[in-house]
Length: 567
Image (tube, rainbow, N blue to C red; front, side, top):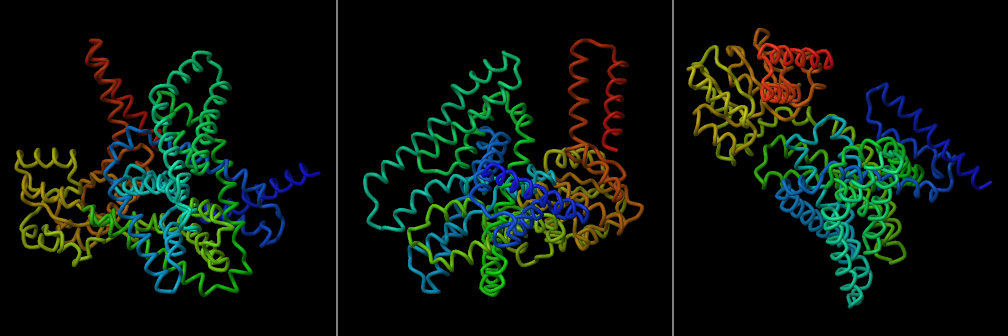
């Protein structure tokens, strides 16, 4: 009968999840929020349809492990090396400042020092599962704010290990002895062993397995690596999910990462959904109503405080203001590893039960609100260039300074973004004596463009006011070369309203972005994904000395086929 009860609970959870998420999809609301709400409804403190949370938590733990395993697969050690500055400097600043601010505020309310530090641990962490899921759905993982957000999340995930090891010392200050030092040494040794395995063992094992041409064997091997590595790292004192994340990094070091990710995708989605449901089951509606004022105050303090800290961290690293704001919105919640820390501290007396209950409720609400915040982040970030006091501190020419210079121009080109493509375009226009003006939210890019072209200004190309200052109504073309599809779409919409006859050219990375950009008013969209295919084909056929007319025909075929697929 226990097995039948377990299956009944699973049917109820999945049934409510499908129903609520379908309704959320109808109104274009985030699915993650729907799963959390479904958990609140079916949980023992909601309608009481599912009473054994422990059984769901087991599946949920597998779900978050698979989710983080797939995130590790997508990152790879090489990608982490490219993000080392954001991970180390950004993560250290954000986590350190969050713990410090939470400690000071907790002490202000008379909480003991060890409790204040532990609350700092809980508050400092954000939700890797929810944030990366949201960024992936919007295609913003490789956008500037996506890379910064990813760097912070990676540091937070690694920071969980020392936080877990610090719990016994916080609950009993005299507990720092040789056993604790031994645990730390064992953790370091196991992590080093994992990274060595990434280079020496796992690629060879996967190569031998793929030679058998048995897909089932490959899936089983990937699962074995995931669960086995997670188990090894868990024995060092870290959480099971952290172990799975590191296991993903191990497999990502091999040439079979994409196949592994494809095979695990369906499993990940099902189990990860159960994780979000289990989070919702922790929320007690009656307790929430009884303590609504302190919970809402905690929620506001956490989300506003973390947003300000993330914004300040990004600003200190001299990132564009739009990136600062979007990252602040994305990372303002409390994460799933905070629950792991909370479970680890049970029975230690480190935190009062009522305070812990209120913190958990506020944490769940922050996770529930995050998908909505990410969805509306682009609208919130629009016009960020209007923060004049902050832009003045950057000591670069702003769109306000452009008014007198640009007013003398006509039929000029406005270039949004001064990366490699923007720089090359600007140089070509200068040689052809075509007037241009450059606008960017990256301070270093603006300074470089000002030195090389003369007419470069700090500003948000999505802002109505900035485009007006750049005389968009008198411009002949607007070229958008920014790595944020949401921002590009918003910029096209604003520019089209201000200048109906303006020719708008947009560079995007993916074919999937073309349709939405054309729909809001872009005249031409160039997808890097398509052009890369054209260049690869052209190069290889030329190398094989294929007739030039046939090469041109094949390139035209690719462009035409890509346009059909995007439409």
